[in-house]
Amino acid sequence: VLLRLLSRPTVSLVQYDSLRSLLPNLFATGQRLGVGLALIIGVLLVASIIAFICFAEDNPHFQTFPMSMYSLAVCMTTVNFPDVMLPSYQRTRHVQKHTSEPRTVDGHLLYQVSFNISSQTKPNSASDAAGLALHATPLFYMGYMMFVAIVLALVFAVIYSDYRGKLRRDVYARSAFRDWMLKCCWYSLTSRSRTYVGLELWVDLMKAYEPSLPRDQVEVLFKALDTSETGWLSFDEFRGLYHLLSLNVKVIRGRTRLASHLPPWLYKSRWVQCLLALGTG
Image 1 (spheres, rainbow, N blue to C red):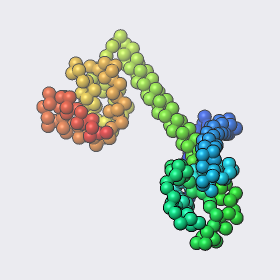
Image 2 (cartoon, rainbow, N blue to C red):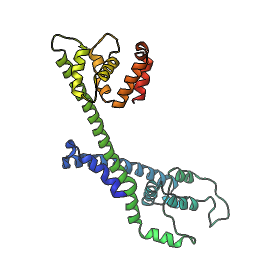
Image 3 (cartoon, rainbow, N blue to C red):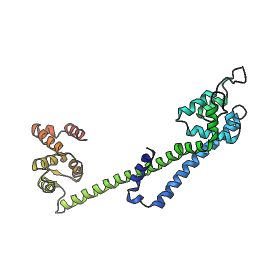
Image 4 (cartoon, rainbow, N blue to C red):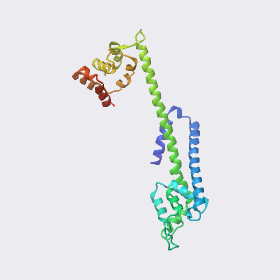
């Protein structure tokens, strides 16, 4: 599952021509990963210093600066693992075993709960085996959790950010190319001292879509574009050609039947056209 989640966005990202140069992409990705890791390490250092200065005498999680940093690092990497968090909350109690008086809620307890600390503590009689096993491999445990929770999250964020940006640029490029093609078609049709497109010229243009679009459907398309009801198309009305040609043929036939059953003034009304547009997506 991990390989599939990691390979799918990577393969999709590398398929684009502008992203096939490996070294520049690795350099840019490394810069973004470095900034993210530096931000996480900075927050971890500041929080560890505050915890060490304020709560070193009362809480064993913050007795030394390395222990404070280690505890908060485990907190950051195990925040979504209840089986690791719950033992930490269970060991952080108001009543200490070596005293018979209950302790009040101190600042270090609120600090620990607010940061969701899930660090190691000294093994007690109930969890000697688990505590010793956990203390035996702290570097492996920390490295694994840091890799899963921080590094992979940053890698996925960078990959999907670049992938989403590339898709957005492709959409803008297709939209600009479509507008350019419509302008070229318009200038070609109106080159013979015309400033509009009439029905006959429109029918000649739509012959390229025969036999999927017979003449009656071509006339329906022309009427749908002719919102001003002048019998000819201006450039702004002509730009709706792309949307109408992207409709399904069944939808166009449905419009033809609807136009044959409704009065012309009702079919061309704005609210009927809005309903048809909503029905076609």
